[in-house]
Image 1 (cartoon, rainbow over the protein chains, first blue to last red):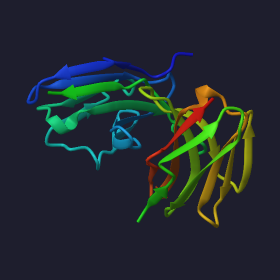
Image 2: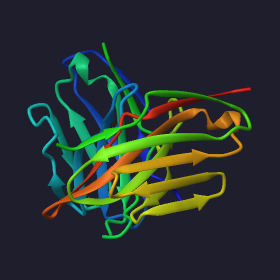
Image 3: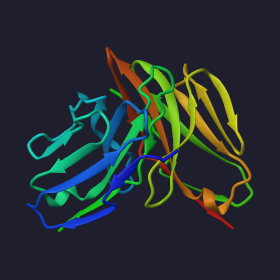
Length: 115
Length: 112
Protein backbone atom coordinates (compact mmCIF):
# COMPACT_ATOMS: atom_id res chain seq x y z
CA UNK A 1 0.00 0.00 0.00
CA UNK A 2 1.35 3.42 -0.94
CA UNK A 3 2.19 5.81 1.84
CA UNK A 4 1.57 9.52 2.05
CA UNK A 5 2.94 11.23 -1.04
CA UNK A 6 4.22 14.80 -1.05
CA UNK A 7 5.69 17.00 -3.70
CA UNK A 8 7.98 18.69 -4.27
CA UNK A 9 10.60 17.24 -1.93
CA UNK A 10 12.67 20.39 -2.01
CA UNK A 11 11.87 23.97 -2.90
CA UNK A 12 14.07 27.05 -2.93
CA UNK A 13 12.44 30.41 -3.50
CA UNK A 14 13.16 34.06 -2.89
CA UNK A 15 11.26 35.92 -0.23
CA UNK A 16 7.95 37.43 -1.25
CA UNK A 17 7.41 34.70 -3.85
CA UNK A 18 4.48 32.28 -3.60
CA UNK A 19 4.93 28.56 -3.07
CA UNK A 20 2.60 25.57 -2.98
CA UNK A 21 2.93 22.08 -1.57
CA UNK A 22 0.86 19.06 -2.54
CA UNK A 23 -0.12 16.02 -0.51
CA UNK A 24 -1.86 12.76 -1.38
CA UNK A 25 -2.85 10.83 1.75
CA UNK A 26 -3.05 7.10 2.27
CA UNK A 27 -6.11 5.71 0.52
CA UNK A 28 -9.11 5.61 2.84
CA UNK A 29 -7.67 8.05 5.36
CA UNK A 30 -10.28 10.68 6.15
CA UNK A 31 -8.10 12.94 8.25
CA UNK A 32 -5.24 14.94 6.81
CA UNK A 33 -2.75 17.13 8.65
CA UNK A 34 -0.25 19.75 7.61
CA UNK A 35 2.66 20.32 9.98
CA UNK A 36 5.65 22.58 10.03
CA UNK A 37 8.89 21.28 11.54
CA UNK A 38 12.01 23.27 12.30
CA UNK A 39 15.36 21.62 12.93
CA UNK A 40 15.54 20.06 16.36
CA UNK A 41 11.87 20.66 17.08
CA UNK A 42 8.76 18.56 17.07
CA UNK A 43 6.11 18.99 14.38
CA UNK A 44 3.77 21.96 14.80
CA UNK A 45 0.23 21.53 13.51
CA UNK A 46 -0.88 24.06 10.92
CA UNK A 47 -4.22 22.61 9.91
CA UNK A 48 -6.26 19.43 10.26
CA UNK A 49 -8.93 18.27 7.82
CA UNK A 50 -11.64 15.74 8.35
CA UNK A 51 -12.70 14.88 4.82
CA UNK A 52 -12.94 18.28 3.10
CA UNK A 53 -13.65 20.27 6.28
CA UNK A 54 -10.88 22.17 8.06
CA UNK A 55 -11.68 21.31 11.69
CA UNK A 56 -8.61 22.88 13.30
CA UNK A 57 -6.82 25.78 11.61
CA UNK A 58 -6.14 27.76 14.77
CA UNK A 59 -2.36 27.68 14.23
CA UNK A 60 -2.43 28.55 10.54
CA UNK A 61 -1.12 32.09 9.85
CA UNK A 62 -4.04 33.04 7.69
CA UNK A 63 -2.56 36.29 6.45
CA UNK A 64 -0.14 34.37 4.25
CA UNK A 65 -0.99 30.67 4.49
CA UNK A 66 -3.95 28.93 2.90
CA UNK A 67 -4.91 25.32 2.40
CA UNK A 68 -7.57 23.37 0.60
CA UNK A 69 -8.80 19.82 0.32
CA UNK A 70 -11.53 20.18 -2.23
CA UNK A 71 -12.63 16.57 -2.76
CA UNK A 72 -11.60 15.24 0.62
CA UNK A 73 -8.53 13.48 -0.76
CA UNK A 74 -5.54 15.50 -2.03
CA UNK A 75 -4.59 18.72 -0.32
CA UNK A 76 -2.58 21.80 -1.18
CA UNK A 77 -0.85 24.17 1.22
CA UNK A 78 0.10 27.60 -0.10
CA UNK A 79 2.24 30.42 1.22
CA UNK A 80 1.95 33.84 -0.36
CA UNK A 81 4.14 35.76 0.07
CA UNK A 82 6.87 33.65 1.63
CA UNK A 83 9.09 35.13 4.33
CA UNK A 84 12.59 34.15 5.44
CA UNK A 85 11.17 32.63 8.64
CA UNK A 86 9.05 30.21 6.64
CA UNK A 87 12.11 28.09 5.86
CA UNK A 88 11.29 24.71 7.39
CA UNK A 89 10.13 21.22 6.52
CA UNK A 90 6.42 20.99 5.74
CA UNK A 91 5.03 17.60 6.62
CA UNK A 92 1.74 16.10 5.57
CA UNK A 93 0.22 13.24 7.57
CA UNK A 94 -2.97 11.24 7.33
CA UNK A 95 -4.98 8.97 9.59
CA UNK A 96 -8.15 6.94 9.48
CA UNK A 97 -9.89 9.44 11.71
CA UNK A 98 -11.34 6.74 13.91
CA UNK A 99 -11.84 7.34 17.61
CA UNK A 100 -9.43 4.65 18.75
CA UNK A 101 -5.73 4.72 17.95
CA UNK A 102 -5.97 7.06 14.96
CA UNK A 103 -2.26 6.77 14.24
CA UNK A 104 -0.86 9.45 11.98
CA UNK A 105 1.36 8.42 9.08
CA UNK A 106 3.70 10.98 7.61
CA UNK A 107 4.85 11.78 4.13
CA UNK A 108 8.53 12.52 3.35
CA UNK A 109 7.98 16.27 3.70
CA UNK A 110 8.89 19.29 1.60
CA UNK A 111 12.01 21.15 2.64
CA UNK A 112 11.45 24.83 1.92
CA UNK A 113 14.30 27.31 1.79
CA UNK A 114 13.41 30.98 1.49
CA UNK A 115 16.31 33.21 0.41
CA UNK B 1 -0.97 24.37 30.26
CA UNK B 2 0.04 21.37 28.19
CA UNK B 3 3.66 20.32 28.24
CA UNK B 4 5.87 17.42 27.22
CA UNK B 5 9.43 16.95 28.45
CA UNK B 6 12.04 14.58 27.12
CA UNK B 7 15.84 14.71 27.19
CA UNK B 8 17.44 16.57 24.32
CA UNK B 9 20.25 14.13 23.63
CA UNK B 10 21.36 10.66 24.66
CA UNK B 11 24.32 8.50 23.73
CA UNK B 12 24.55 4.71 23.92
CA UNK B 13 26.73 1.88 22.70
CA UNK B 14 25.87 -0.64 20.02
CA UNK B 15 24.36 -3.78 21.57
CA UNK B 16 23.34 -1.99 24.76
CA UNK B 17 19.91 -1.00 26.13
CA UNK B 18 18.71 2.59 26.34
CA UNK B 19 15.63 4.09 27.97
CA UNK B 20 14.20 7.39 26.72
CA UNK B 21 11.87 9.06 29.18
CA UNK B 22 8.92 11.34 28.50
CA UNK B 23 6.90 13.21 31.07
CA UNK B 24 3.76 15.10 30.21
CA UNK B 25 1.17 17.44 31.67
CA UNK B 26 -2.00 17.51 29.62
CA UNK B 27 -5.73 17.63 30.12
CA UNK B 28 -8.01 15.14 28.42
CA UNK B 29 -5.28 12.53 27.97
CA UNK B 30 -6.18 9.96 25.36
CA UNK B 31 -3.05 8.10 24.40
CA UNK B 32 0.69 8.48 23.94
CA UNK B 33 2.70 7.83 20.80
CA UNK B 34 6.37 7.30 20.12
CA UNK B 35 7.78 8.11 16.72
CA UNK B 36 11.26 7.63 15.27
CA UNK B 37 12.70 10.24 12.94
CA UNK B 38 15.97 9.81 11.06
CA UNK B 39 17.75 12.96 9.96
CA UNK B 40 16.11 14.43 6.87
CA UNK B 41 13.24 11.97 6.95
CA UNK B 42 9.64 11.99 8.18
CA UNK B 43 8.58 10.63 11.58
CA UNK B 44 7.61 6.96 11.54
CA UNK B 45 5.23 5.39 14.04
CA UNK B 46 6.77 3.13 16.69
CA UNK B 47 4.23 2.56 19.44
CA UNK B 48 1.00 3.63 21.06
CA UNK B 49 -0.02 3.35 24.73
CA UNK B 50 -3.39 4.30 26.16
CA UNK B 51 -3.53 1.98 29.19
CA UNK B 52 -0.93 1.65 31.92
CA UNK B 53 1.73 -0.93 31.37
CA UNK B 54 4.32 -2.15 28.93
CA UNK B 55 3.80 -2.72 25.22
CA UNK B 56 6.52 -4.82 23.60
CA UNK B 57 7.24 -4.84 19.90
CA UNK B 58 10.43 -6.62 18.96
CA UNK B 59 13.47 -4.70 20.18
CA UNK B 60 11.33 -1.74 21.16
CA UNK B 61 9.04 -1.48 24.20
CA UNK B 62 6.99 1.42 25.49
CA UNK B 63 5.68 1.93 28.99
CA UNK B 64 2.97 4.23 30.30
CA UNK B 65 1.92 5.38 33.76
CA UNK B 66 -1.05 7.71 33.46
CA UNK B 67 -1.10 8.57 37.17
CA UNK B 68 2.51 9.76 36.97
CA UNK B 69 2.23 11.37 33.55
CA UNK B 70 5.21 9.31 32.48
CA UNK B 71 6.25 7.12 29.61
CA UNK B 72 9.46 5.57 28.42
CA UNK B 73 10.69 3.98 25.23
CA UNK B 74 13.09 1.09 25.75
CA UNK B 75 15.41 0.08 22.94
CA UNK B 76 17.24 -3.22 23.30
CA UNK B 77 20.21 -4.65 21.38
CA UNK B 78 20.97 -1.25 19.95
CA UNK B 79 22.08 -1.05 16.35
CA UNK B 80 23.80 1.79 14.55
CA UNK B 81 20.64 2.37 12.51
CA UNK B 82 18.80 3.25 15.73
CA UNK B 83 20.62 6.59 15.74
CA UNK B 84 17.72 8.97 15.25
CA UNK B 85 15.43 11.40 17.03
CA UNK B 86 12.66 9.86 19.13
CA UNK B 87 9.53 11.94 19.50
CA UNK B 88 6.97 11.56 22.27
CA UNK B 89 3.47 12.80 21.41
CA UNK B 90 0.38 12.93 23.61
CA UNK B 91 -3.15 12.93 22.27
CA UNK B 92 -5.38 15.30 24.16
CA UNK B 93 -9.13 15.83 23.91
CA UNK B 94 -10.79 19.17 24.60
CA UNK B 95 -14.49 19.00 23.83
CA UNK B 96 -14.82 17.72 20.28
CA UNK B 97 -11.33 18.75 19.37
CA UNK B 98 -8.46 16.33 19.63
CA UNK B 99 -4.85 17.40 19.35
CA UNK B 100 -1.53 15.63 19.23
CA UNK B 101 0.96 17.51 21.38
CA UNK B 102 4.55 16.85 20.39
CA UNK B 103 7.71 16.86 22.44
CA UNK B 104 10.90 18.33 21.00
CA UNK B 105 12.42 14.90 20.50
CA UNK B 106 15.42 13.07 21.94
CA UNK B 107 18.40 12.74 19.64
CA UNK B 108 19.97 9.31 20.21
CA UNK B 109 23.49 8.60 19.02
CA UNK B 110 24.53 4.95 18.94
CA UNK B 111 28.29 4.51 18.96
CA UNK B 112 30.20 1.39 17.91
